[in-house]
Image (tube, rainbow, N blue to C red):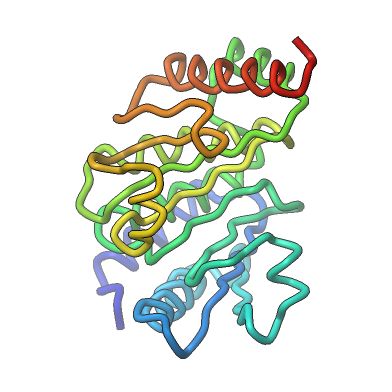
Amino acid sequence: MLLNLEVRTQLRDIFSKELKEGVNLKLFSQAIGCETCRVAEDLLKEVADVDKEKIKLEVYSPLVDKEVSQRYEVDRVPTIVIEGDKDYGIRYVGLPAGLEFTTLVQGIVQVSKREPKLSEKTLELLKGLDLPMEIMVFVTTSCGYCPAAALTAMNFALASDYIKAIIVDASENMDLAERFQVVGVPKIVINRGLAEFVGAQPENSFLGYLLSAYEKLRRENGQA
């Protein structure tokens, strides 16, 4: 058992108060060549057991369930998809342990509510997006500021069909961390480097980087 009685009680309390609609967790996992997959599966099973009515868990193997993996554009394990009535583009790549367990729980709660926790101004500006935007948030399990940055990205993904939020455990995905020169976390990389910054920035600052990347993308596409 990964979650002790105290944590289960806290989760039950949070879920009973906060969960509104059903949430589907899809875990992409494999038995061979993945040190954290088994733990991720056990963890998600225990989380789903806290509220069996609202939280459903499905486990897939990219090697076996190739069609599903391609549909969700999953190429790493473990990867967790948090979705509601539809796929909002929210992914967690790695094991959400330590302080990142908060990110998982907050992600489930926010998706369950089906509406982002963002200001009206931010929501209005996000409506103007019409090109695919990917927000990659590099985190570690011991980073106190990472859950806030991850949640902002997830809220952006909830707000716009054009935004994906991919939370990446930097220590489990060293190749990606090296590729995007992650030396401090949280590090946010938008559209593979069109814009990037370090730290849990306030919502309006985060939005500024996103809109800056969007304008660059428009110019690249000859839309400026």
